[in-house]
Image (cartoon, one colour):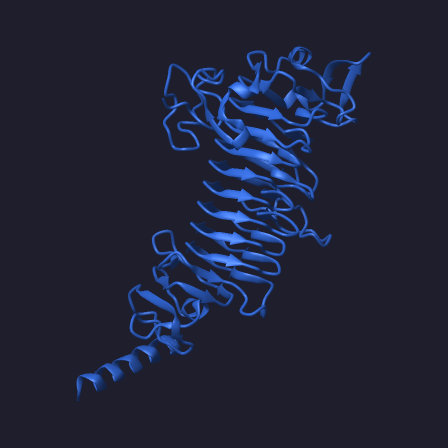
Length: 447
């Protein structure tokens, strides 16, 4: 047999093995996808597949699907059961792998769908123009989405429902036309959203919703709480023109929001509340963020219907809206005032804020949904922000006009924070502290 004939027979055998599903005995392998591949390909290096979905259909735990640069149709990973040490990795081999409808044709509302699957990693993929979501996770757990670009999608960049352990890291997510950049819904716990750039979404940059119901009025088995959430080191800007804001959380507990930069937000920067969730916020830590609200923005932090502590420390927060300010705590039904003087609030028992920096001109709080607004001195009667400072915000940053929020030399934010066990570094991975004490905001001053 000639060498050419031998190779041909070998390829036929490989193709038969993959296409018939007799793969249980094989070791994990690299499967190859290329725009020049065949729809019936064996997904080998010499005989690549044309579609990502084909390789996913017979992948086993530990496989890596290597995708060459090019445009690919939408695909689904379904009923895949990976393990922590043997996930399915779908990885871009270059920097131009795009999953999107071809010539406007769309076979499904979402471009990338992971359903009833565990331990899947999407690495370096790009996805645009989906009618609904660029990436949808449905009843799939411990999925990682990293190093991707998702833009211009009809409703969401990344959407999850009834999922646990989602990690979304180092992505660019922008331009969702109707709603949010990232939407975590229908309960599910243990999520990490880190190092992403999230911008120009009509709704929230990040929206997290506990959802006691599935949205159709029927009771579901979910507990209505999303817990163990880390939101860190993200840059989130120009979101919320149609509602929402930078980070919106309904029924979220045991969460930390740290080292984020949020600016030009048209809703609220951080909202923690209960509408659809089973309970309101509890054990929520808001540490070392830099927040610059847009001129049409709402109150920077809106806190409603707490079920436990909400703590705000080491932040820089200011508002460009002269009619709004920093904190909106509770609503008109929860206020206790006498002759216009703040004496208490149902929500204030769970709320604590201190060691922050504000602009001199900012209102610090409202406790009746903006009917009454308080400055720093009156706000301190609640024992909040006793050690916080109010300064000329123009002297704090390197270049606030060009949205450079690194601390300027001599900034009032330097060495003004307190040590926090949950914050060991800054948004740029610099160790804290660099000086005698922690600095305020997302950036530690590095000479």
